[in-house]
Image 1: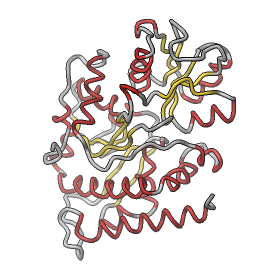
Image 2 (image 1 turned 90 degrees about the vertical axis):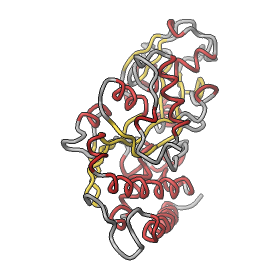
Image 3 (image 1 turned 45 degrees about the vertical axis):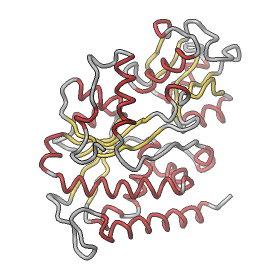
Length: 325
């Protein structure tokens, strides 16, 4: 296995390559020798400590934005709703799950998507259990499932996967709690299983002997689009060239991370509560290179089917001009 130092050198080389591409005419408004013609050169981006934002953090650490002519500030958030609420005041862009963004949009918040962050892969989100008798997803008729929120991607994908296993969604009993409390709740038999993402899956397995009851990125939720970055529509209308520049640098960062997932695993120790050994075991999904309306519509349609939205949402209304093909 490569040493951490070797991983860092390899990641730096990949991100240096991405930065070179950025400087060589791929950024809108540049000729390769001058700074881009943008409305503003600073961006404040809200982030949470999740695997999804690893490429963004690596781009920040490797000065990709700075080399492209953008001064970026990463602002830690307590939750997704906080980030959306702070748009146009203390934030210009925020990270959130697509489920949260689409629900906010349906409730009247004028948003524009600026990039996809993450797409689920094998065991990047899963139902985890400590109950030896809970041997298959359809084993319990009325399972108590810990989820971070009853209205987010965890509850949505849990219902979809358990429905496939023959469990009626009306019989699923979701219990809201933070990821950090889920193992304790399972040990106390307060819940039968927990919906988790990485690195909590790996931590529960290695620290408590938990096992994966079922991957929740299978069947109807295989390769599920998890999260993205959004600005307000007002900010997008006033700063189209700045955001086009952001999307290009983000694309380079996503591509570099996709080519070296070891760099992603290594980066987790810098902003999440994981050690190097745990980080090396974390399953990593896909980092999309562009906004894909067909892929994103899949999330909105599932939300509509599960009655999370008041009516069907056309994601085309959330996309920047020129990104709907």
